[in-house]
Length: 201
Image (cartoon, rainbow, N blue to C red; front, side, top):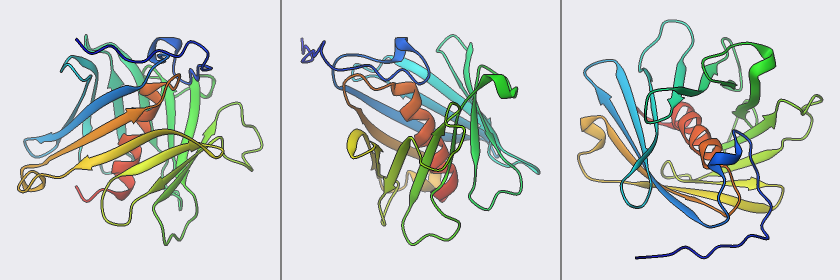
């Protein structure tokens, strides 16, 4: 059985929680599918196929979108809320199902209003001034793949796994590589927002 290379000297980066940080490289598969005409389902699996997180929400919404990330037992972990009338496609991420400012963890938005490249900035709730982002996301020109940086340090990579016909069936699959110490629930939330802003479905 494969054993990951453990590095106990790597600092942890628990944005959502310590339980989502490991001292080794974490590989995930994220499967997104549309059920019926409006229901969105997301399943986050480890490299053995065990479900770690689940996401859901409505595909279409008259006002603002909301996405919930939950534990496998259905207990809400995070709520991702789209801000209305935002030029930079701003999303706010809260603990559990909250919308209270005291439960705000971080904000994700496009790096600029008009973009030539697919890029996002992430600001932690503790970043009061909001002048310099805490994390930066650099995307691909051709698909939904992207990389996440803290400063100049690469902390996660997401690659879209394209299969002919999957898009027309309302399905998308992603491979996620989370570097040692990094909060994988945090990275999954970035993937969901990135897909909402730049995705075609």
